[in-house]
Length: 164
Image (cartoon, rainbow, N blue to C red; front, side):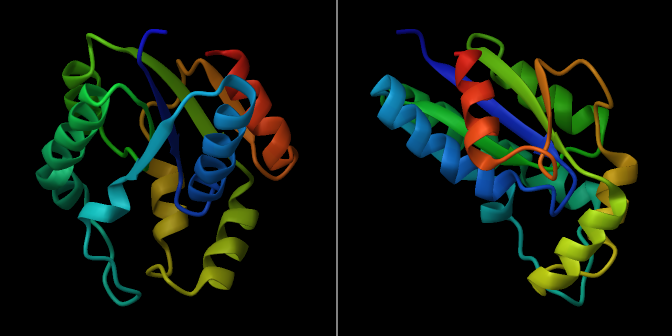
């Protein structure tokens, strides 16, 4: 078994965190492999009053990258829950993980659904979903793109697992 990293990249409220948990369980039951979830959210001080800026994410991105490397050293795979909004953040992550198999998955759904989910969550600065939808990077080049409005968690997890 070679260690793999699954990058779930998508706009805020596109379903990454929920999918990460579902995928972790799916991999454990179907492949008997342990994957640890880490999220950019763990490193950000998010409030409903203040937006998150690209510079803030770039500044703490090395901490996420180091955590991923530390998990991989334990012999487990990693699921990264991220909202990448610039080429420099993307390059920092991909260059750090260049020695590992990186499976890139885009989570998406229509903008009106992102806004609805953001409003329902009540734990994000209003407008985060739309801003991250607009600035998501990269726009293409994923191993898999999943519409989380159209597909169930189980179907998304199964499709990702097929790439392992």
